[in-house]
Image (cartoon, rainbow, N blue to C red):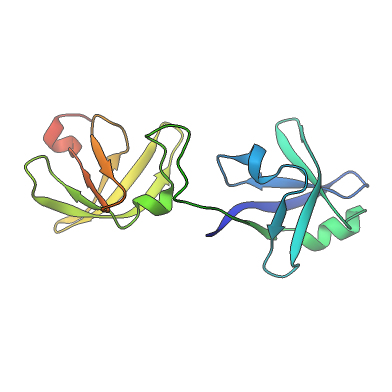
Length: 166
């Protein structure tokens, strides 16, 4: 599946490096030397160099040799072909697209609603679930989402107002 993994920012220096706004948890893999990244209007870019400077990822691309060429790429989104069904590092690794569309059930088996969005917040991810009474936000932690069955697109949730958690 073609997923957005970054966005090209401003040029850094004069030798064709670009700052990158990273939009993936696997930056080391997605932006490794030789990686091919698709763009919407500039075709495929191949990573020629990668380094971190003051906490910012800097990439050089094959055929991009100066600041002016980087500025032409500014704000271009970078896409990688990602297998969202590949196993994660541990059993609790899920891709956002695997969670969206899952049906959430309460512990008693009654249907609660459908996951419409996953918000990546600093503390933890939060599931937005569309219920009969409106949207409910549930932190995506094991205490409130004890089971997730990606294959069958279902999960068990304990909404905070039911569990007493805040």
